[in-house]
Length: 216
Image (cartoon, rainbow, N blue to C red; front, side):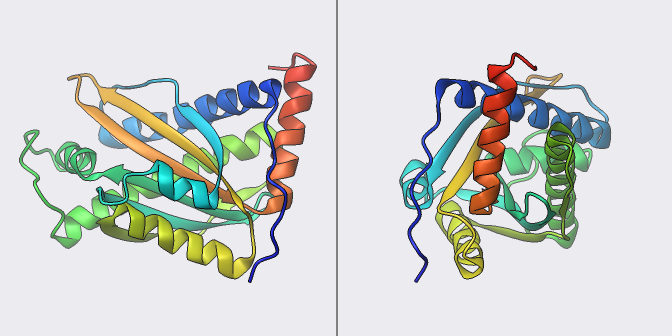
């Protein structure tokens, strides 16, 4: 059984800085996605929260079907990262990627559809990690992803099991991202960062200093 660690509380400065980090990283990720798809994509300011693992399962719609990837992160801020798209958003992405009319995709059945979504998740994860690494002047590299199309509760549970086996963290940084293309098609996504416990403390400590010193 994992040793229980004290939950880290966010100060106002840390929360503001974490929101800024989420905005920077999400914009990098969406820019990479836009280049891949070949369309203009706008992103709303992401909502960022630091939540306890047990609290996460109460915040998500566990019965919602999602497509997503899970990657292990290697480097100074090691851990796991998960990218999830609710089914309707996943279908919209497949339509965009495969040049279909919006609404054509109604399920994820073929290897080509799964491959397209896995590659999308991989690009988002890699760009997201690159932005975070640049922000903290450190290294952070995602390993090859694993893909699944399942209930959100099951997907998150798989990530939690992987984290528990590594005795990594009791807290998760949750980014909720909403973006739309030039045709106003909206895509919703979640990026879940499962860092090691010492990495969470380091992230929040650095953010506290940057915002407290006015270094934006």
